[in-house]
Length: 581
Image (cartoon, rainbow, N blue to C red; front, side):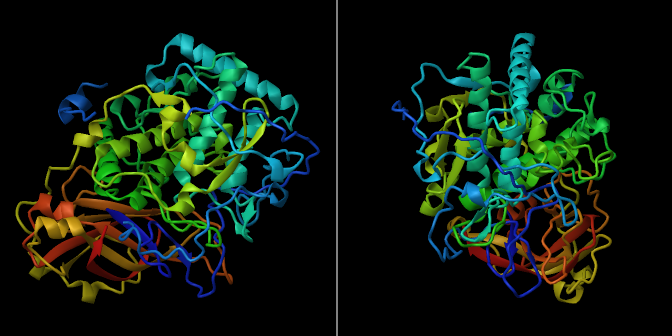
C-alpha cells in the first residue's frame, strides 16, 4: 500500500504542500492550466428529459510475455471539517488558465454559459435498448476505425463555430477548465485531479464525449476504444492513432514513442534502457502493485477527500499516480514542445484524441478494481457522492451531474469488451537475495536521517513496532513504512524507488522483484507560496504483504534501500507504524 500525506493532514494519499505554515491554494501542475472566455452564446435551460433508467485470469507470465510479440492509512482518520460536497462550478467565475508561472493559455478554456445557471437541471439517463461496448483499441477492425475517424472528423468540423459546446476544441477545453484552475468554488481554485474527484469527473467527461461522437454518425451504440496498456498486447500506442492524416492522429506526440515502441507505465521523463520483455514485466508488476498491493482500501484507490472549503489537490490515488500520469508524459511531445503538449500537459491533453482512449482504460480500471474483492468498493462518504459537475449533452443541453449517478457503467449505458488482466497474477515472486540481509551491518535509520540529499542508493536498518502478527492483527492494521518530510523543488520531476531486504547494489530497472515495495513520484507543480517552491510530503508504503512474501514476518528489524531515479530529494526521518485500513 503506497501512501503520501500532507504534513499538515495525516494519512492522506500522495499529498504535497509547501513548507510555509500559511494555508494556501494549490495551483495545478505544469501539465495543467486556467482560462477565461467572454461568451455571448446563449443556451436555454428549459430541457425536457423524462426518460430514466436507472474474472480472474490465470495466465502463466512466461506465456503472456513471450507469446505476445499509502497511501491513505485510515479511511476515516481525516476529519471532514466542512462536510460539504463540491458543487457545480459557477461558470461566471471561469477565468484565465495558466500553463505555468509565466505562460498563460493563449485562448479561453471556459464553456458557453447557459441563460440561467440556477435553472440547469440534473441529468437523467435516457432509455436504451443496447449497451454501448467499448473495444480494446489494438484489436479494433477497419470498419470500426473508419467510423471513429468519421465521428471525430465531424466533431472537428463543428469548430467552425468556436462557441459550439459539441466542437472538438470545446470538448478539449472541458479538461483545461476543470484541471487547470479556471474555475473557483467556495472561494478556492477547483481541481479535479489529485483527489477523490479524479475517477468520477473523467467518467462523466467520457460519457458525454462518447454520446456526442455517436450522435454525429447516427449510431447510439458507438463506444469509445480503450487503450489496453495493462495488457502486453496493448502496451504500445494503438496503431489506429498513428496514421498520419487521419482525424485521430496528433502530430504533437513524442516521435520516439511511435511505431510499436513499448510503453513504460512508470515513465517520468527518462528512458529506461532495457529489453521489451523486461519493460512489459515492469509494467505488469506496477499494475499489480497499484491495483492490488497499494490499493486494498477505497481511499487508497480513489484519492484523498476533497470537501468544499478545503484546499485543492489533497492527494491522488494509486492509479492516478501510476500509470495514469506516466502515460500522459510518455505520449506528449516533450522533446519538441515547451510544455509537453499535447498529452503531456493537462490543458492541452484533450486536443489529442488518444486522451479519451487512455482515460477509457483508466475508467475501466475502476471496474476491474472493484471486482478484485476484499474492501475494494465505492466510497460511501456523502461529500463524494453528492459532488457535482457541469456538462452539455449531445443535444447541446446543459446539465448538472452527481458522482452518485456514475457508479455503475451499465446503468449509464456502456460496458467494456472483456480482455484478460494478467497483472492480477503478477505478484513479484523473484527474489534478489537469499535469506535475510544482515541488518547489523547497516546503519540504523536514526543515523541515516535526516538525509540532506538522496543522490545515490542508500540502505539502512529500521525497527518494526511488532513482529509475528496474527492474521487478525494484520486484517485490522496495515504495517506502514513511513518517510516523513520529504522535500524537493516542486517544479521538477521527482521519483525514487523503495526496496526491502536488499542492499544498495539492487538493479532498480528490474521491478519484478518481491522486494520492490513501491515508488514515490511527483510532477512539476505551480505551487509557490512566499517565493518558495519547496514541497514537503509524507510518503507511506504498506509492507504487510511484502514481509510475508519475503519471509520477514518474525523479524524485529528489516533492511530498507532507497534508489533515486529523478530529482533532488531530502528526507527528515523514517519509521514503521501500524495503522487501520
